[in-house]
Image (cartoon, rainbow, N blue to C red; front, side, top):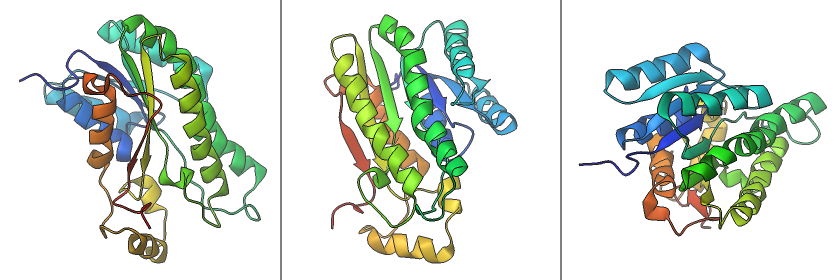
Length: 249
């Protein structure tokens, strides 16, 4: 039985670990050819090799999402290896929990560069190939912190909320050009970002989640599969919240 992403070619950023790795594994299992893109070369190579060992189509491409040159190479790699690019998943992100009184300008700039400027450069680089495919899809991984404020995480809040409107603007511009753009807002999910939180911070967050548990990378990836698939052919500019009910109260 064909997978939901059979015939798709997906470039997934931050795919060496955490949510990004979950995307690479689930997308490949659903039939997509996957470009595992990350700045972490060794871990990214391992993910791609493991997928190939499972009979999947996967290659690794080193990618610093803040680099236009790296992005051009990543898009070219997808076309060179698989003949086209149909899908972009902007997942790579960095985390900083400082409030405005504590964060330095350098730290602020790093978060914005990776979490907001990176997806901007990536979409700009990938859109010609996505449009050429005739059935392109972009899935931007934002955060519940794009719609829920805290007293810290000031740069993270700003970057992820900026991604929401960036996505909507591009969705509107490309609505009649064969490219859909949607956003996922994950809640608390296992991965490198969650690992930076203290035990007390994690406990406090889980108390806010009605389902009482942390999500897994596959929970987010399964939502992205829908948005990247032809099942979502009439869906663009939307936001899918996957948070165990955290945003309900």
